[in-house]
Amino acid sequence: MHVAPVGGTAVQDHVALAEIELCGDLIIAASAAHEDRLSLESIDEVLKVAEERDATGE
Image (cartoon, rainbow, N blue to C red; front, side, top):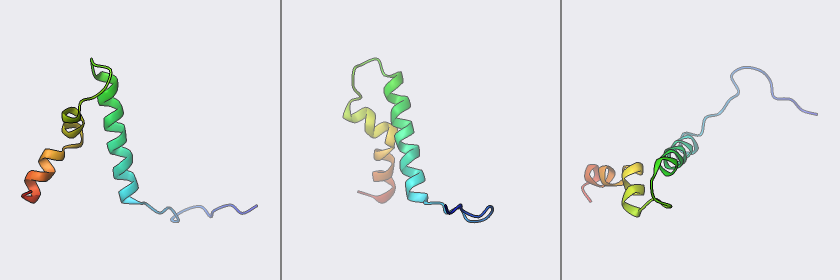
């Protein structure tokens, strides 16, 4: 059996961490929603899609 050495070997995948954070934000929004499903507009709001579009000029 191989065990990873202790200290300094952790690798952070920043894209994966960002995706996990976004999923968490969606889960929180869905659990707080009064309707059965989040609307597309609500999802865009949680994911800050409009803000990203404004920042890129699209």
